[in-house]
Image (cartoon, one colour):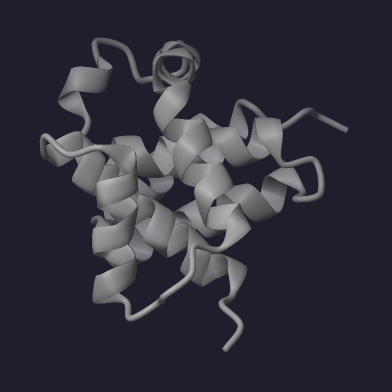
Length: 134
């Protein structure tokens, strides 16, 4: 059965949330999430997203922090929102075959599933700063 890119992003989010919440390594987190989803093989794009975001999270955080609301810091964001922002920014910057607006839309879908309505607007506002004006 083919897994949609949206499902891959959802699995990436779940894996990154697990990594940021527990003392667990990347491979173990991936295997745990895949076992829960009853998926036996790691899709290439899932590995690309998880590994890319996890190993570059400090750089992503530095870039994201420039566009947070006044008097806000990354520490004030929920782990849910922070991981969604990281995935969205990573896709915008590192997935040239995915238009930036699609990456943002996918981040907003994750926010609808896992966060609250205010977060969706906030995530959209922050990630929109990384879309080149055409």
